[in-house]
Amino acid sequence: MNLDQKKVVIFSGIAVGALAVMLTVLGNPPNQGICVACFIRDIAGGLGLHRAEAVQYIRPEVPGFILGSFIISLISGEFRARGGSAPLARFVIGFFVMVGALTFLGCPLRMVLRLAAGDLNAIPAFFGFSLGIYYGLFFIKKGYSLGRSYKIPQGNAYLMPAISVFLLLLVAFSPSFIFFSQKGPGSMKAPFIASLAAGLIVGMLAQRSRLCMQGGIRDIFLLRDFHLFSGFVSIFITALVLNIALGKFHPGFANQPIAHSMHLWNFLGMFLAGFGSALLGGCPLRQCILAGEGDADAAVAFLGMLVGAAFSHNFGLAASANGVGSNGKVAVVLGIALLTIIAAFNVSTDIFQKKGSELSNAQEA
Amino acid sequence: MPRRLDARGLSCPMPVVLTKKALEESPGENLEVLVDNPTARDNVFRLARNLGYNVEIINSGGEFTIKIAR
Picture 1 (cartoon, rainbow over the protein chains, first blue to last red):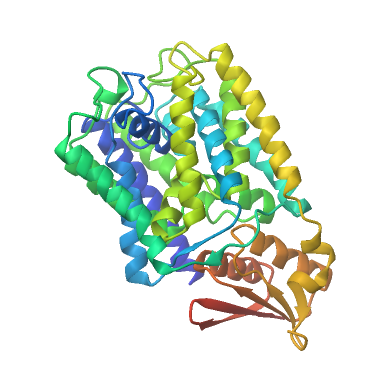
Picture 2 (cartoon, each protein chain N blue to C red; picture 1 turned 60 degrees about the horizontal axis):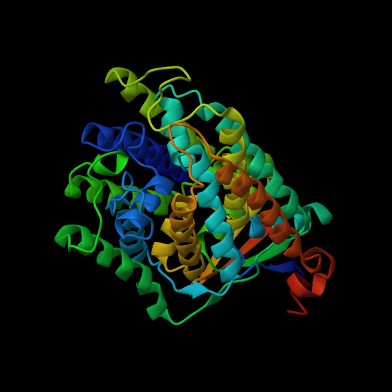
């Protein structure tokens, strides 16, 4: 079981890395074959929740992730409605994960893909992300938890897949009230079918392998376990090799596509994203996968990310190739402070000190 | 008389953190961990195996009892 799981993680990483590069060849923005944060931001734009004209397109990849996870978990019997673990806190945390990611201009997955294309601006981001997770673990080790989730009526598990199908129908039929970028990253897209197929495959593999950028680094800090990190590394190596082979590898800091070189803010943006992901128990991709499996709490975190993306562009928080504006800087600092407060409020010493609640002798139980 | 840890409903990494804590508190003692999602099951399994314990998983209707013993 252990060995097989390891193979699944590595294979999934290879497939994700290859599909991501393939999607850029087919038309997705450079170094952005897959970016969960960017794509959720584009979806918010496509729905008109923000009006940044360059980033509006209901990306089929994201509903693909959710539906891929939905389909494979139905087959494997892991599809199960659950919820009730501090949904509002998860919404707020998801919101700020997005604010942080859009300061750097990418989710943790795009961070790896940017590194694999030679974008060295992702190096400070990687350190920020790792340190953010370490900071999150400080609270987790002290007893931070958003509480238990509970089984809820099974019908609830179909809501996120239904919303995903609705999003795909919107793209397919393109009614006049949705938005499509005419220029900028939002106008760069692989064909609908390719995007959807890649999304479905990534969703299925990520569900089976539990692939998670945050989990990979967390497990190293927490358990000295490189299991999930091996997925992270296989994405990097696969994308690196393909980028070199296709002439898409351009090492350096300057003139990287959809990127800026404000190192402090790349660091702090991903610190916030890493911290938030640790508090949620998963990176943005993982939240999509869990939402597809019937986890209503992850679905709420997803909605938090969607709203966070809309606010990021409506309030001028999101970075651009020109860098991070003052609103964005304030939002990142506020976000780190606010998530620190949320983390501290949810440290329950009970879990460790009162054995009666969690830990008991089998005889008593 | 194994000790029992109820980690149902807790999302990762909490089940692993609690299991690790429980094993460190009384190393070598048998422990049963109750979880209700496959990710937690796999993670707790891996943790205990990596720490050199024998692990047995009992599946009962979507809930898993992970028996950890030396």
